Amino acid sequence: MKSPARDGESAFGRPGPVPVSAGPRRTPAPARPAGAPLSIPMTENPKARHRQPASYHRPQTPSHCVTGGPPGTCEGRIRRGDTVENSGQSRSGDGGAGDRHEPGKRPPGRPRESGGGILMGRPFGVPVYVAPSWFLVAALITWVFGAQLDRVLPELGRARYLVSLFFAVAFYASVLVHELAHTVAALRFKLPVRRIQLQFFGGVSEIEKETEAPGREFVLAFVGPLLSLVLAGVFYLGVLAVEPGTVPGVLLAGLMVSNLLVAAFNLLPGLPLDGGRMLRAVVWKISGNPMTGTVVAAWIGRALAVAVLVGLPLLTRGLGGGSGADLGGFDSLTDALLAAILAAIIWTGAGNSLRMARLRERLPGLRARTLTRRAVPVEAATPLSEALRRAAEAGARALVVVDGQGAPTGLVREAAVVGVPEHRRPWVAVSTLAQDLKDGMRVSADLAGEELLDVLRATPATEYLVVEDGGAVYGVLSAADVERAFVAAMARTAP
Image (tube, rainbow, N blue to C red; front, side, top):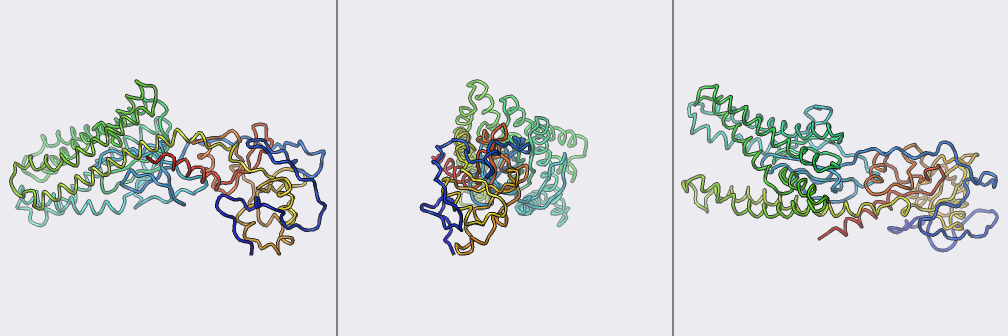
């Protein structure tokens, strides 16, 4: 069994001759300079060397990408089968942790992962999921609010926990309205929304594209807190309409206060909160540079994280008037733990926004033209050993299966080639190792950056046929090569 190719090395690119079956020897073709177009004819017939099949075309580029990062955090990462965040996506959340806009991008060729919780519905066509962590926070809210009800309405007895559970559900319904505001605005701006997720520290709206204008960025961020303020006003009117000291009065007052807190926290001017996105939009408008806006809002976000870590426990203790638990008590410990979690989320989200903005600046360096492998055409019945010999002579690292007229019909998978022992290669036809060439597997040589990643994600595959605008074959693009280049770009953004 031939050993697998080393990382970054093609199975077609080993030094030295490749074992071949009987056949005439040919003069080796000169190596193609970096970026030079494919010069190998697409058939063995010299008259057909300049054939450009009508099936060649520049693929349509979808305007969507994906998000990533673990639920409830703003930390970007890259790993196989998971998502990678960059500044091409906004991910907005609210609740206790505020509204987090997390940019994201998936590595090329990876299928979209499943939802992230229990699917509750699809308002406006966008799936809404409830993460398992929500049940934990619902239990916590039920316990805390139940203790408060025991002091305000002691006659409820154990029924107070049922009322508290209703409050927890109603509060997260308000969070959902907040997220739907982001969603409706995004859809209005023709930005695809992948999903909404309700989780421990509020909600997350995964918007799969970044706005192209600071004005739209500002509106997209502002509508969430605005709807929370509107809900607070509606609940205030409800408080005025019911009798004080009753269950409806207490519930409406609690929902009014909670929505006011959500709006106020999200309006803090630092990434990854809504207020940070608004500040970024303002600086972007003034400076004309979105990166400048990201830097300013991210560093203010880090300052906010420190302020939350230090100030929140002092604020809650001051609001309590110094009564009850002291700094060593249970309440103070809970406040400090909550402050630490919120500060960590804000700090991580601000740093991630800054790092992904830097990655966005480097993404244009991912060009299909420079990452494409030289390829040779082979007919379906060609033995693998003969095909590898031709590739070695031409200095190529990919094989394109063509029909009798020279039109490409499939791409030989590198992983399948590696898995065939050398002694069997003269008896294995390349057609048995090829994947059929679909429309989405034809990639324009002019694609670069986010546009390239979007196209590859739209049709997950291991190899893609790269063509010029006129339809001429340029070569073969390996998803593994693009992913390695993406990882290298990610590494260069590390602080």
